[in-house]
Length: 232
Image (cartoon, rainbow, N blue to C red):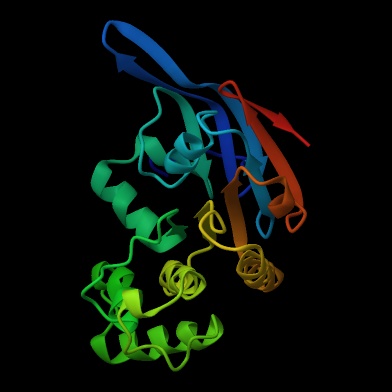
């Protein structure tokens, strides 16, 4: 057992006394003051809060992208920030899929090429990459759009590509940052329905949102307010 491993963990994710400070000139600003909560395998949890409340900072910490100033993030018995940056990157590529708020699709790559990007660092054989990418493309309802460029798609279709890219490696944990923030209400409902389907198949999903309407699709809500969390 490595020093990074934690014993007697019963939850998939444990956020333990997490805090995050930033320097602004000579002043220290706390984006997150003190967060404590857990998420179990197979849950669909929404993290809601106003702009600037700390929810996106929290999601980036949970994604292994933003080192907290204090506290522990324990995922599947590993203290993520006790790992080296290389170990953390390996863990992230295997365990965590991220749907970014602004899609972050590469404009000069086709839909299929965008979806295959996460497989580049996992060593998946090239012959399997197309097969896996086509499979998730069908899963998100875009089976015939693999050869298109992102700007040839609607906003909702681009969101579906972002979801396909996030799940192509079958990560146990899916993090979604405002997945419906740039969509009309009808398309937003479709995307939330797709996330519900994925959750019904066993996918653990943590979704950041500022929209209370989105929370009705999830099993539990964590409200972030003034750098602290309030469980509902």
